Length: 527
Image (cartoon, rainbow, N blue to C red):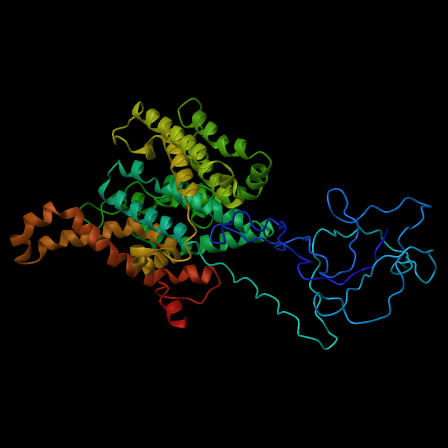
């Protein structure tokens, strides 16, 4: 038996059914980590029939509508024609379905199906999914106004947890280069952390065309280095560096590394004269941070291929740099020259860079946390075990033990990213450091490039304290005992001066309005 369409009654219609749509599963660096349910919240429910004295359709096994009669079978309870009347809502009007009476089925009493339009030529479309509610169509017939569409999602801000890690890494680099404490490389492997964060941001950016992303990265990276080179290279020449006499015309090609650092930039082993303002090895120390720029450049150029490989073979791509380090970083195979230096840096920190891909793509969230953490701890334990058997004159300085550095940094960064919260602002007491964290992130390249040169300048300023009349004689012992602490105090005002003098280049490189002190204070005033 068939029934014509009925209006919805109280309790009928959409009930609490299962939602659909997965939404965003795992966010990217600086974006939303926990997504939203993208589907409707309910499905079709089982509503009640009108409460009246009218007859009900016979119950079927399992509920639902009765099964249609077989072809040719006679209807035993046809529906008579019901004159138009008020809607059959319970308690307001008689039921729209009177008792079924026996009688012949006639054209006047037979239910007529709703007409369907004639088919027209065109592509064959899939049948609509009737288990899901359709889109809400605004009523344009003069009725109640349609419900306003939800406001678009605001653009996600920076992930302050990742910003905090980057700021801590920069401070640790400065402190290590001042005090030389080898255990700092174990306590917080700064370079591995910086490469992991950069890899995550690179994977996020590669949602755009690879060519434009690489150009953007180079544009942001190279101008700050050019500003640095415009200062130190002329000083090297002024202090009697004569590389053409020593190396010939080949030197001019090597000098190009100050413009595009695919290789190691040249510098003199000693520059200046004894008793000068800087020690003789100042050029070697000043140019030391340039290895990071070279490694970062190679990672940027290789990232489109690395990301494709990672998404096809994630674990192989993640662990391949460790295997390469075990070959060329342990003496099994020696790759000479600056190419060998660059290849070793690529191998040691390659797994951290690819780990950033895993963080961006949400792979780390798919692994049970106890498995991820225990696996990372095993890798870190291997790194310490390897380091214990290959200590150098500097002791536990992992910078001098490539395989230990690679494995310890990988495990350490994995734990940091597995437990990574998504902070739109720094919580609790950390909020007091917000402006400094913002400044460090906006001037990260400037701080890293200049910090060694600034450390030497700070040491020279502390040395001058002995020359101050009366002060040097009175407090000379205290100056000697707290020498490194005084240098640590002096380095931060000098860093501030370097930010004021050269930091704006980072804004120009990023096509932003130049700012002298971008600590986020202007953003707070606008808010």
